[in-house]
Amino acid sequence: MEEKNTIEDKSVIVIGTGAVATNFIKHFLSIGITVIQQYGRTIPLEITIPFISDINNINTDADLYIIAVSDDAIAEVVEQLPSLNGLVVHTAGSVSLDIFASKFSKFGVFYPVQSFSNNRNIDLQLVPFIIEGNSMESVAILKALAVKISNNYFVFTYEKRLQLHLAAVFASNFSNHMNSIAQELLLNENIDFTILRPLLQETFNKILTINPLDAQTGPAKRNDINVLEKHSEILTNNPIFQEIYTLISKSISTFNKK
Amino acid sequence: MEEKNTIEDKSVIVIGTGAVATNFIKHFLSIGITVIQQYGRTIPLEITIPFISDINNINTDADLYIIAVSDDAIAEVVEQLPSLNGLVVHTAGSVSLDIFASKFSKFGVFYPVQSFSNNRNIDLQLVPFIIEGNSMESVAILKALAVKISNNYFVFTYEKRLQLHLAAVFASNFSNHMNSIAQELLLNENIDFTILRPLLQETFNKILTINPLDAQTGPAKRNDINVLEKHSEILTNNPIFQEIYTLISKSISTFNKK
Image (cartoon, rainbow over all chains, first blue to last red; front, side, top):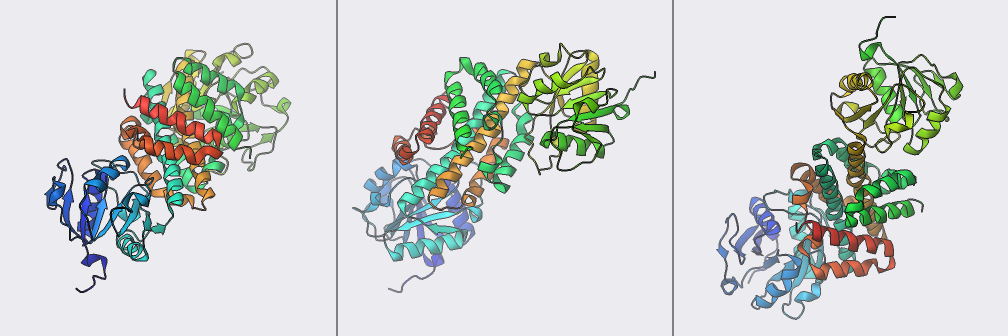
């Protein structure tokens, strides 16, 4: 059998029906990557390629299987999958390659450093991909895929990927939560969240153009005890927000003294 | 004496040499507001109008005095100022109007909901201004000023302004700190912070287009115990980051269940 040398010659199966799976399939089709099947336990919102909901019907001759399910569902998918000769990868930031070791011979990780949500199109061309593979061959296939998608990839160890994922949680999930708290505080006073829009824009611009450490401002940075106490007092009725306020203020004050 | 009816007819003195004072003066001059003096203890980087460093030389005939110094320095400035007939205002989010009550007869607050930094031009036309005044007349002057600058103003009580300022601290200072921690974590593994740029852009877009509460994603939202434990373990050597990780994850998990 002739070796398939380019990523366009390879057949791909996507496992999952969530936002990552949906974005991958759409983008793959648009750039000429052959997706032959999608598997999921729930019917996807949009079916663009042959869909199966029974894992026993999975095509075992594909070259690449991309498991795009939530981190805590990967182990179960691996258990249910039949023996496969193709390369099997997951897309998770915090799951080790070892999860595949006892079952498959070719396996890897293809982690997009992005937050995917239903009904939001992500331009994959801008997404950095973190690659890991069990062999040079596995890594080479994933590099070829990454080059085709975004030309923005890094081959990282598990430890490095995990650290990056943790950083992404702080930068994205946690900063979003800071905004959720802000929204909740404004709601209490019937103030529309959009009042913060110019401030958020400037905060974001500074994070990208200056670095966040140098961009830090605010009462905690200035160690303005009066303001810190007034703010804390407002939060008396919300102990967890108050605790967050005190802890982050302390962290800013410590961190920015270094 | 003829009454001065429009804001262009009024003479303004700016007290302070920091980022707020600098931005105000530049913008005021560009839109035809007459700034007759700037006072500060340190010489400003750029002198565009008559500057005094001795408060005794302050012109006592101005119509409007804008105290644009850090929150914890306002009281001292008030103490040092001579008796004034003009309207005296500060620009702070968390300082009560009462700070002026025993000294002046016309006073107010003119708080810009924005974070100002040296060497960054803020387009004041996009900034919402929060107004408070000791009288209808004081409020009217500040409204006229706000209309001239940005046409985006709100007359709020002290309690409402304080709550807004607290929300701004969460949305801006605290989400910046989340990014500082991310940057620090990446530095430990020699990963460039720019790897997070597309993720930050998407996070920011979601905060503005969806609301932050609905935009929340991540292991804490999914209550993915495995990932939460792995992340926490990485932070063992940094107790304050670990404490922040645990507390915010708990808050996300609680808050998003409501």
